[in-house]
Image (cartoon, rainbow over all chains, first blue to last red; front, side, top):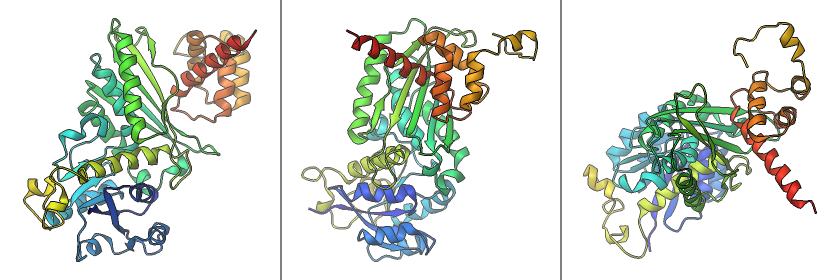
Length: 321
Length: 85
């Protein structure tokens, strides 16, 4: 049974952690790791794991005799905006782990099923992957006119790509809180905390709700969603039950629910405090697995002649490799 | 609680255990009112919250963690009360 083939572009913290996760996948095989700096440790780490690695950038990747079915972009928003049209032209479905948001915003437990055909899927941000399931869990139980999220991560887990994209983080996460989470208005805050030993990723979700909203229904919805996310990110936990507060002086008459999350990583690359890597890479791996399709049944890639023709992405763009 | 804080006699009189612990624990100054609010909501003294916040080295912007700390302290107290014979 053939696996879908993949390339990871960007051999930094996220790309390296993603490689570890995809190497455990039954459906996706990472063929190439691509960077631009010959001195990159990430390329050496990939080679040590048996993956063909090059500092030749996307030019090198697109020159391969066998192109991958999927490309995971773990560079920066700017780099992805430059690369995205080239992947599309080559008929490679892109899973974008930068906040470039060239394609639809995807949070697997909320809306992945709507976008399986898209040639380019955006994974929002680490804070978005952690918090948007919760915004959605509240908004499916009661209207949420406003939602605010705070993502705190260890400074050590934020590499140069993440740091170059702090503004993109806030704007893309904000948009996703509204479009994917279902809040009327969103706000996202990211904090890099330099404490040593590093802090475990923490995320807090505040949602404005009606003072007479059904708090039992909200709590049940949040607990159910926590279980769903924990299926692909085992370290995803609630620190306490959702906290309900009556309207405060400056809350325009709205009450508030507060949800406190901790995201402990798997320790695949960086230690377990870097849950922000895991929530992003686990979500991307989940997307890759679902795009690769079920192995035994269905219109599988194995039925198709070329490496790309079975994918819905190729159908949408009409391009094959 | 006023948002327009000036150094007056009353501010100086407010130099209480919370503000002293806050300085001792190296906690960002604007956390004080948040800690007092969380102490009111979840019970227990504000200085205990500030001490924990200092130990965790939370930085400005992490006011949400003050509520989290107050919740954890409340859980610790409940557990201690439950464990009592």
